[in-house]
Length: 107
Image 1 (spheres, helix red, strand yellow):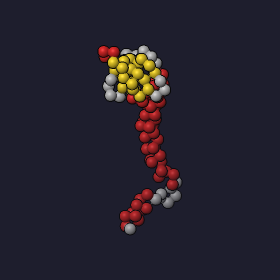
Image 2 (cartoon, rainbow, N blue to C red):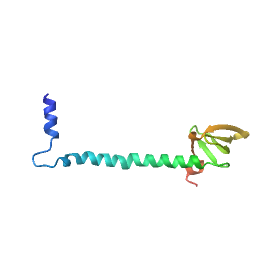
Image 3 (cartoon, rainbow, N blue to C red):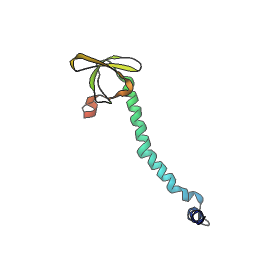
Image 4 (cartoon, rainbow, N blue to C red):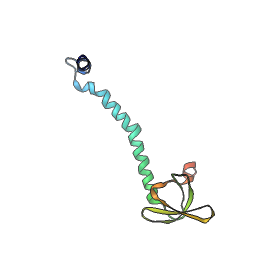
């Protein structure tokens, strides 16, 4: 009970003080969190989704598992890639990360 009373006394706005001023630090923390953490992550996901939708035949790609290959065929949810020794793999589009040249900054 003493802890609750102490909490109320510390968090309650002082006499004549605007109660919104006490919420200002919390609002600032939320704004900073949004602009430095949430917004960049959403942009990254949007770019990745655009990349996966724009994949076409002949593109060099890399999967989440690190498999490098060349796109041979594209369908709605999957792509068929050709890897070393003319082997073909069917891979979900959601497993595509990016093209290797973009990761090296050579695009």
